[in-house]
Length: 145
Ligand code: FES
Image (cartoon, rainbow, N blue to C red; front, side, top):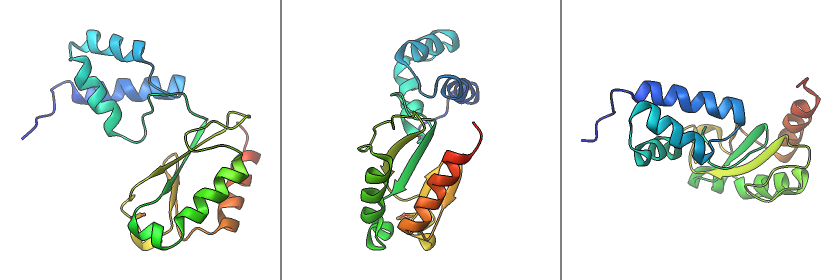
């Protein structure tokens, strides 16, 4: 069984700090963390790519993750993804012109009873419809930054 390194908690905290500050994890920062904590770079990457809250590429302020797992797919997730691509005017993994949004998909958020589902930041939105997704996007756009 794979063991978590003793510095695992420190590593995750450092990665969260970088992600909050820069909105993604640049390679130079991962190399610096690797040296600082004396953890192989491959292990730092392993943690950085394990959690969906981390991104190795620049992203918008809000990452919209639409679940396309089996249950969400059956309940119409692809229609939500298409709507969001048109509404935000970005392809998957793109950044909106205003820098506010990145659209991504993921597979199963573990709350299939709420399908179709999307997650923005720490918040999960269930029983999604296009109208509901539209209201959520409008609310985020109107929120003070
Ligand atoms: S398939 Fe979407 S939450 Fe499980």
